[in-house]
Image (cartoon, rainbow, N blue to C red):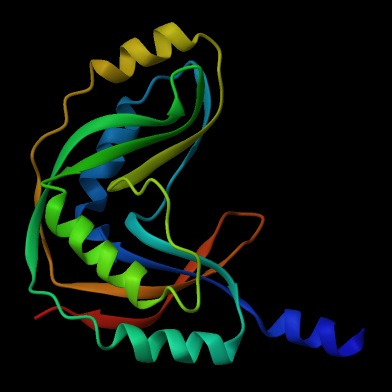
Length: 186
């Protein structure tokens, strides 16, 4: 029992993402436009999760880093596109900003997913998005959705030149993120 507790304590909550904090001020502006008729938990940092790994032991994290070092892709640009929600209009849990074009993002995500298939389950239903807020309860779903549809998203360009292995530590004040490794594209 003691060995199991020690091993669990050494595990890390990890995910692979593209950092979008360069557009943080713009995303914060969008957050201010979100409907006020819902309990929202606003995101403080902005990234696109390519693959969530979950709780990972240090030796598996090292293997992951070594595999990710071999991912080859050229830098590419993406543009902010529109506001959306997950999972459905009847059950709103997340408000996000989409990205276009998705093909290069999907290509990178597929390379990562495929290269790590011996260590982690493959992603299902990947959608390129940046979370703006988690929704606890919209008082009036119809009004909430209408107000979201009225938010116009500018086509902000960002050059994607790397992806990161990120450690997420959950705290009472929200998650704290730490880059464990940055993988340059090109």
